[in-house]
Image 1 (cartoon, rainbow, N blue to C red):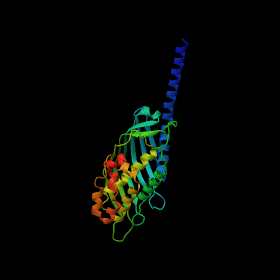
Image 2: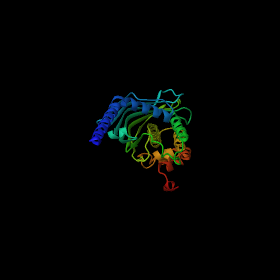
Image 3: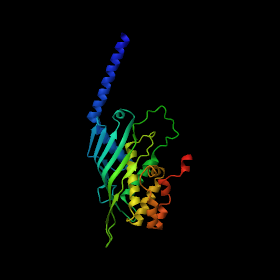
Image 4: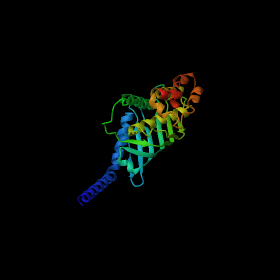
Length: 288
């Protein structure tokens, strides 16, 4: 009798805890998600990142991120590098209370990227990629560290991420008699080769989106000045393993990068020598 009473009390306590957790997510989930995206993006890119609003529907398992803006580094005439009208996220509602949030789909839609030239072969996008390179190099190497006694950090297990309807406005240095603005419409970028055993943070996702968009520009930017394409390709190459993880077979971009580079000239070919291996890593890399 006493044991049955104990079980009943325990069940009631568990129900109260679950109700309290659900209420907390309903009441504060929007703010928590907004803070995570803004802080994670700023950490990864080293520039301010902001969201206009977040709409969380816990019952439908959906999250809408509205008005995502990535600010330009200092020294550029335009305020923003990227603006995304809407990001839709489909999640497993039950996983919101675990250390691994299961995300089936992320769609970034209606994106405007303003790529601004500063110097012959320097742009704001390259500065952001350099910030990513620096952030990635400063991460501690945990591959040989024992972490059995540490509680794993909450992360995202993503199945599919798609970037669509992306317009890139390239602001070139003013040269008399030459156009100073070019517009590129990127093909959809699809990523579905995420490692389910390696949860990602919002900072990680921010990095992958920027690198993937840079890869798309590199593939479709044959009309851009040779020096800009060369500088962008070189910066992507400097990202090493991080760029290789993103611009590989699991990303539906990049198959024509080297062909485009061959058309542009020897200067571009030189800067892109290592890029083909980053897009499709050699099989021997996995065995080393």
